[in-house]
Length: 404
Image (cartoon, rainbow, N blue to C red):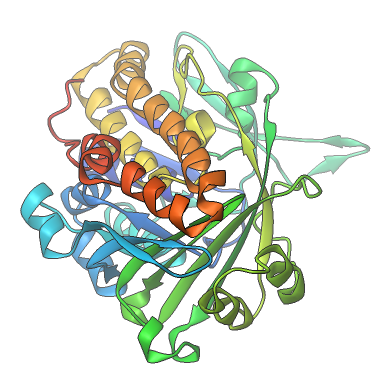
């Protein structure tokens, strides 16, 4: 039996752990945080991601905590003009076999953690910060920060396994150990996020749909969470004066309102209903041409971090974990298995990263500034054929049948 070490206990790391445990592997997850927690924000899981979760046995538990959006729509920043993007709900199940969920990130993390611990109670190790790794012909050692300090030297602990997976996010220590320093470029985009108790919004805004407001130089996405108890808000503006890549830096209501001055009254109302808006700088990392060296590989944001404009970041990390487990099961040689995993995933995730970047230009186009030009632009960019071209290949993906 192979022992797999996973650096990082986020969504991708726990999905991989669950998929591996279900196939009989021994797994240790080492997470730097002292408690399993996710930022209080939402995410979207289209049918491709939900398929993997149902196959892992946690779809039903997540469904109880999620919203099954009935559809997605596009709205114009100034007038509120509305266009249907696509139907979801029963249509997603009929067309793709699985639902489309809007999910509170802490709920997804909790469901995955419960699934992992049901199979191996002590699989998740908290307060375990990864420092790097060493590998040889017989295995790989994950080096962890230890509380023991002698003089000015931090003494590290090490754990041993057959395979190491870096699921440690955009600032991955494992990626740095494989390929050197990260080359992230500021996009000129600043994102705002907040979660709004639904009762603070008027009844007409408490709808079970995902909405994407588009405008010159910015866009806003909002959708319901937790069976309609919450509304997730994300607003993005083009500005170059904030370059901190962190989800935990608080801004102010006034600053957020200023960024969306002149936008529709519904947007102003939503911003004022947020308790504490947070802001972060969006940075671009080119997709890696290679993920694996020997017994070590990467998944999720560690190897294909993306702008959040295609709503596929979480789904891709979950898919990674599922395909990784299948590849390790199918190939007895660890190095060969990781190569097959990478080959099965790299083209798809690269296309996803590039598609999300393309949506920046689409969502923020100058043609959206004036109503008549905007209507023609939306009719052209969001007609049925163009929408299918951008999304169908994502939603129809089947983690159970992709060759590994």
